[in-house]
Length: 376
Image (cartoon, rainbow, N blue to C red; front, side, top):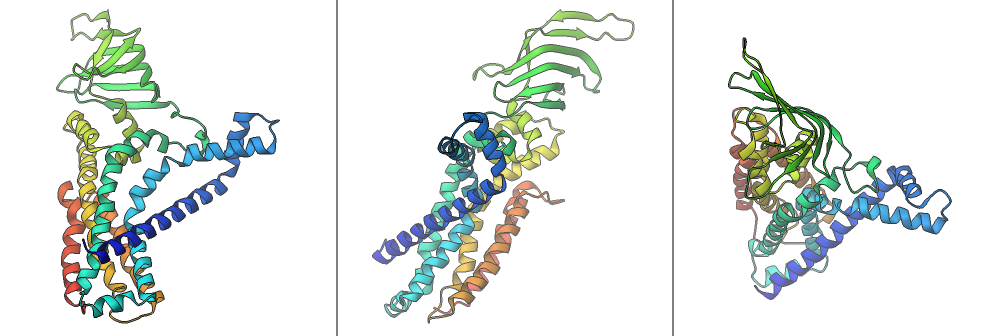
């Protein structure tokens, strides 16, 4: 790597950090202002109604940090590509202002050579997003599902589980599921045969998820009872039951409850869910596959959009930077949004793997055609 490559990469990285920090802080300020009453009310619950101003201010500040800090990883996942485009624009604008581009061109460097550090930079940032998606987002995902009514709480509220099938065609239903304790209360399980007729009904006061890691997964039952339904002319029977094997995990219940939770899963977690879903759950399987393939398609889309936006600022002579910025925004923002939508939306007649990479397939010839006409 030459000195000029390091110079451009360092400046690009610094601009990315500054721009990303400003946008993240701005988003936090807007959210806190719009929900200030909720933060103040949560602060009062924590320190009491008689607390002084400084104590209340400290409580609200800590609640804001607790509520907003997990969103840093989600913010990076959504906006790192666009922020990288903005950092490229600021970097080249600074180089235009100081006539550095003129000096580089006079030294014999081509436009393609000057563009390479930006492409390498956005590729590295996209790889960092893969690490973020695999390591950090799955850990903070439950905290990201909190709304302003749950400020200061470290756990999700319990919710009712509607009739939900597992991989063995059994139907689970419960009026309350505690995501933190991974417990179902007053659970009812209906076992069905190949013709989807109920053959056994299992009830329990509490069902707690058990995953030994090397054994059979399922729900440990407290007060469990199994009622076998006899065929016509036969008598059924009752028997106590302490464990019910199943592949319906608490993670799957959260995905069914909160659709955006699936986007925060790691590749390993998605693979586990795909292995446990029933073959009839085609919509859920396609959704998870799109999320899996889009992780890698995003890296290519970010690189291609960077190539697409670079010519708006790369010019052989000083130019109007406001016009360059406007043209760059017109190109980059709709392209990024459109690519993201195409990667996660269901496209009739197109398999998830092709649908996720469809924006890449479309962008490659556009980028090649554009750079063919770049004067260097």
